[in-house]
Amino acid sequence: MKRKFAFAASLFIFTPAQAEAPVVDLIGYRAVYEITFESSDANSGIIGAEGRYVFDVDDACEGYATNERFVVRLARAEDPIVQDYRLTAFEAADGAQYRFTRIIELNGNAGQKASGELVVDAEKKSAHVDYAEAEDQSYDKAVLTPVAHIRELLNTAKTGGDRHAAMIFDGDVDSPIFYAVTRIMPADAGAGAEGDAKGSLTDLARWKIDTVYYPPETGDEGEGAVPKFLFEAVLFENGVLTDLRLDYVDFALKATLSDLEIRPSDC
Image 1: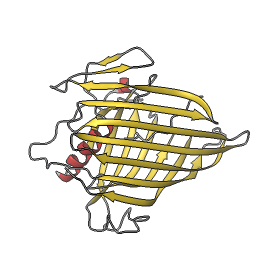
Image 2: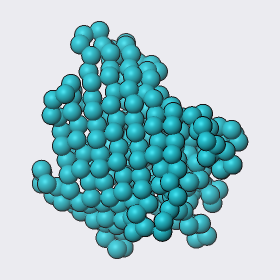
Image 3: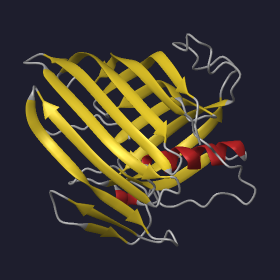
Image 4: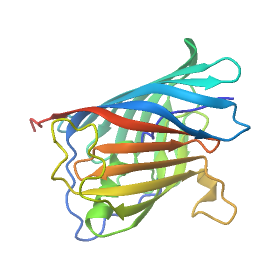
């Protein structure tokens, strides 16, 4: 069975920003997370996990350049599985263009590779992706790219909203989009600061987020919709995420911040 461990995440039906929404400028940073096992269903066969996730984003003025590496070793009653996920992408500042290459290797062997360019039309009513390895795809609704999604969540949080729903572009050739519903909740002043040795997050506003990813055809969480993935984290006002919980339905992992480097913008 193919498994994706991307956050994407990671991390849409277009949800317009509210009238007085503040401008959200995300910082450039490099975050390292340690992956640990949390729980699993008896039928999953997973009995443990360890790994590391590195997320690196640069504010390139006209957009955001991101690099991700997620390596996890899943212990099983049978042979373990080692998955190595890599993503390199550039996203335009307005979210209208997204160029990406994502590679998944299993136990050192080539798995899935997908690369291409996603373009969202100016009215944000549709989107089209040109794949290098597969047939192109078009969507009759706009989708949010990863950084655009974070900005939308922050806009919603800063204007007092507690819910955000959107269609999210993942990039996978077989399952490129998900319908994501996020609850946004207040977080205590010290929440999510573990691993921030330099105190870069100390005085920042933060929220707890809880996102459920559904197949796109389920739309507005219709009755009987079955989630494909669940994601929890503490989201800071500058876009940094900490205290990640990744729930793949039949097992769950934790990603704990161990190192954070903030980069000042030259823009």
